[in-house]
Image (cartoon, rainbow, N blue to C red; front, top):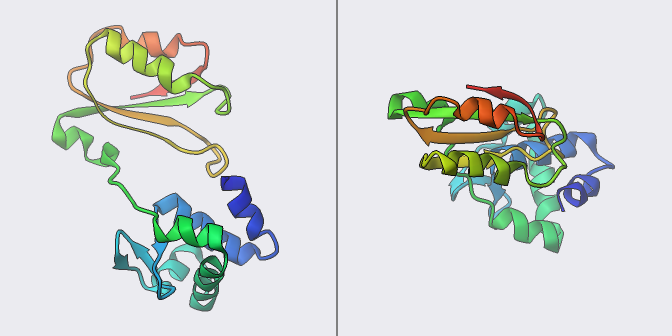
Length: 166
């Protein structure tokens, strides 16, 4: 589905950058054609500045999204969720970042979660960056401290894992 969205904008690289930015940040489009985040309008000039574009490109992209029924449905309902990884330490959590050997391989999340579950660790948040959007896809797991000895080595030993970052 993501590739279909990106393909829709293949004729306009500048609008494609806007769409990728919206998807990367969980931003949507409201009925008025304004970029929004969880119902809060984001100025087109702010989006344009963030991606090195022009506000008119952002506005045109939003209009184009609303003109296409499938895209309209997706972007009218897009919601952002907080990423706790930058504040995890302050909250008493640990962040485990797993870089896969092949992000398209199935079972990476399940294997890592099994390791954590075997150690009775409570997972506070988990997210995966989509391999179609990210140059370096990753699995980020936020767990309660402290990490028992051996957990990281067990995750590193999984056949799907290229690297683990704490």
